[in-house]
Image 1: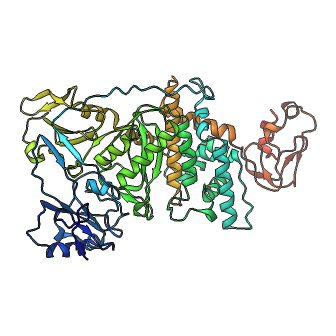
Image 2: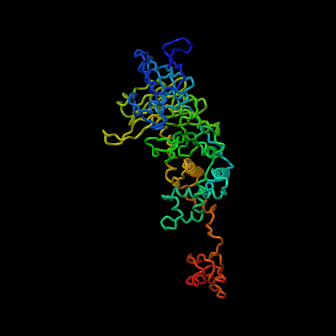
Image 3: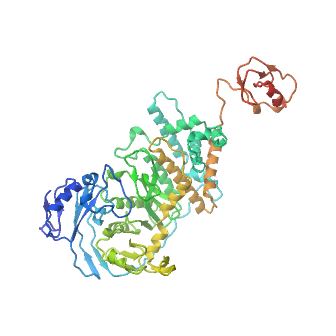
Length: 616
C-alpha cells in the first residue's frame, strides 16, 4: 500500500493524505498499517470504520453505540470485512467563529455501505464536501407557506363510499390482472402440461381470505375449512375450496422469471412495488411534513437480504425504507438488498434522496419538510436537498456534524436538564443543536432552530414531581413529525395477515396488502369518513368474499338435486311420491348419509326415515 501527500494544488503537503492503491482492504490489513504508523504524525486522531461483515454476525444495524471499540478484540468475520480509515486534522481556530477544514478520507471501498458509525465524509463519498463556517448564532426562521395540492375532481370515492371501494383504488383491475397473468405464467413454467387457470374474481377472493386471517387468525390455514365447530369459517368455505386456495398460493407470482433484472435481489416483487408506489402517491392525502425511516417485514426463513435489528419489535426479516406522513400513510416504500446496491454516496443519503425525489416528481412545485433519525442525517444531506427546495430535520451522530464546536457530550451531561448549545453554519444555513434531556441528543436542521423555546414535562427524582424544562423548537418539531413510519408499523401490526407461504417473497406480498389497507383507511379519514380500523378491514374481507367467491359444488360424476332445488309445490303434493330401491348410491337429501333409495317424483335420494320429513 503506497501513501503520498498532496494538497489541492498538487504540491506535497502534510495536511492531506490520499490512498494510491485502489484495492479493497480488510480491517486486518488496516490494523497492520496503523501499527507501523509513526506516533509523531500530525493528526488529532485516527478513526477506523467497519462495514458489516458479509458472513456471520449482524448484517446491518440500527442507531446506537458500537458493541466493541477495541480493534484487538474483533472476531474473524469482522477482521475480514472491508473498512475505512479516516485521518482528522488538528484544529486550533477560535470557538466563536470557526471555518472547519475538511479532512481527507482514505476509503478502501468506494461503493460499500457505511457502517453504523460512518463519518460525514463517508456519507458523501465521491463528492467534494462544502466547508463549514460555524458561528454562535440563531437560525432565522423562514416563511415557507404550504399550499395544499388542488382537489382531485376525478377521485371516484367519497366519505360515503364502502371500504372496498377505497381498497380497489390501489388493488384495481390493472394490479389484479398483473398478478393473474404472472401467476399463470409461473404455473406453466413449472409444469408445461399444467392446466392451471386463474380469473380476476378468484384472485380477489384469494386476497379476501388473506385479509380475513388478519383479524381471525388460526394456527394452521387448513383449519378454516374444517367442519369442527371451533374453527369452521362459513364465509371462507362458501367462497373457495381449500385445495383451490392452496393451488393459487403455490403459484402466486408478480414477476416474469424469464425477464428479471440482473443484480436486483428483489426483482420477484419489484413490479408490484412499482405499481403500488405510483398509486400511493397519486391518491395520497399529501402533507408538508413526512418522515423517512426503516420498517421491518417479518420473515423466518433464509435469504441473503434478511436483516437483524436489535431492539426492534420485529428483529428478523426484510428491511424496507419507507416515507410516511405523520398519521402513517405510506407515500413510498423500497426494499433494502444489502451492499450489492450501486451508489456514489452513503447509504443514508442515498435512501433519503431517492425517496424524496420520488415525492417531488409527483409534487414538483411544493416545498417539503423531511424528518429522519441519526442513521440518515448529515450536513451534506441537508446541503444537497436544500438545493432541491426540501428542508431536512433529524438527529445526528457525534461524528456527523463536520467538526461543529458544540459542547463536549461528557461535560454536557453534567449540565442541568434542559440545557442546550447551538451553532449555525453561515455558508449553508444549517443549525446544529445539542440538548440535555435523559441523554444528550444532537440535531441538525435547515428549517428549525432553538427559538421559540418550548416546554417539556419531565419527572424530577429530586423534587418528586413533574417539572417543566426548556426544549428547543427543533426538538419539539422533530418529536411531532418523526413518528410516521412507527405509526404505519403499529397500524399494520394490529391485524397483520396471519397466513404464511413457503416462498420467501410471500411475506412481502402480504405486507403490501396490509399497507394498502392502512392507506385506504387513512384516505377515507382524510375525506371525512368515520372509520374504525377493525370494521374497515372486516368490511373489505366480507365484500370481496361475498362478491367474488364461488359456492361449493358437490363432487362426483353427476349431482343430485338439492332440497332447495325441488319446488315446495312438488314436494308437498301427495300423489306419486314413491320410494324406489336399487338406485345409484348417493347422499340423502336430508341427513347427507349414503343411500340407494330415491323418491320417484322429486328425484332425490332419501332414507325411509327421512322420506316423510322431506315431503312435510
